[in-house]
Length: 178
Image 1 (cartoon, rainbow, N blue to C red):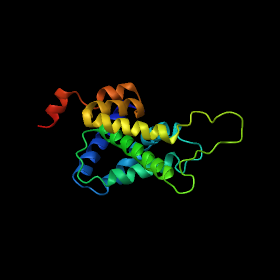
Image 2 (image 1 turned 135 degrees about the vertical axis):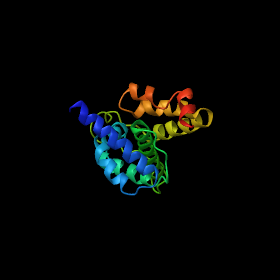
Image 3 (image 1 turned 120 degrees about the vertical axis):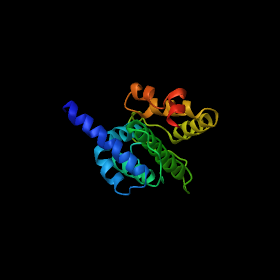
Image 4 (image 1 turned 90 degrees about the horizontal axis):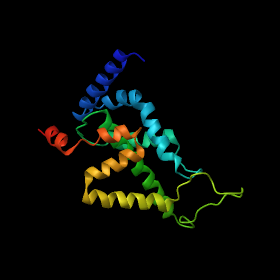
């Protein structure tokens, strides 16, 4: 992809995020196709640790997160990284909500299925671990919201470089408020 094309695309994302923040209803419909591949990558990372018979797949997780993101009224989106970080949080919330629902089902909701094949499934994350992680992140949020964003970004973002760019430093964060 040529540099000019990337710059134009980034400019379009910034413009659409600003429009979305002002309540532009069709901005999200135009924004998501531009960021869809990145959203699917984030969803794929989230789904790696989930059980193999999960109700949601990567596409459904992106769509569920989209519904949550569109429901945020007048959110002031700072940039692409901010949007993707909030999308990653929305995906995590969707998975936690599903885990809680599955755990609280009547008749064996807390029981885990065990496949008849030899050996455990590769890298499945038990519901208890997902719920414990969510509780730990909520506890950390009460103490230090910025550190919580760093943990979430490092766990779910494209790379450690993205986690260093978002959230902004306290100095940059203070300058963004003015």
